[in-house]
Image (tube, rainbow, N blue to C red; front, side, top):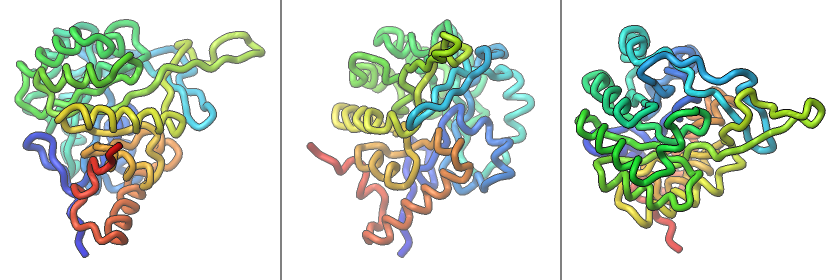
Length: 302
């Protein structure tokens, strides 16, 4: 039996719901020698800013119980380098390229979107990074600022628009509704939760940037609830993620209401994780005689 795995965001079709999470797959240039990227539904690039960023001081990653803390600080070569050097190399991937963008002001998001208009398949607006001094998570924690950024980007691009939200808020449904009402085509749930790890011998934080974003299996139940909660209170497409380590995790997110899923921390443990998860989803659908993946999306009710 052939299973239909395709799904859509606005007019953009994905061959399957498997995406790589921004910041965990780079730009795909290293990974192309490890796995067949064309088998994925798409890749979401490392976040791009107007100017190059050096990021936070090391150490940038610390392992924790059931997860990891990171404090990268959006290190990237800037939009011009991305367009001139990186994009020509990754345009050969036979899958969707989604460019993640981040700004220090709401105007910068619009500028980035305009520069990317004819270059990628979709844009992800990152207003959720917890490891930067300007912008990032502080934008995504405020409804008014979220509205302003989404409006700014929507005016500058006709591309499918995804907004990546932070879970470090009082009510994520309110933020999700603000993105939906102001032109977003999808939201990505969730980015990392704020966390801290200390060295009791040196009496200081283990991360060079002090605090960081917690990802991995530890956050899965909370991320899953956020997806379910937003799915039942909005009509916007959802890309679910947060601690997806195997196909069972992935299927939970789909059943909770995500149309697509993104694989992040699992890639650090197993570079082929995304394709193994895809195979696991296919096996589940075949075993259950489910012809179309849409039959299980959002089927969980209270």
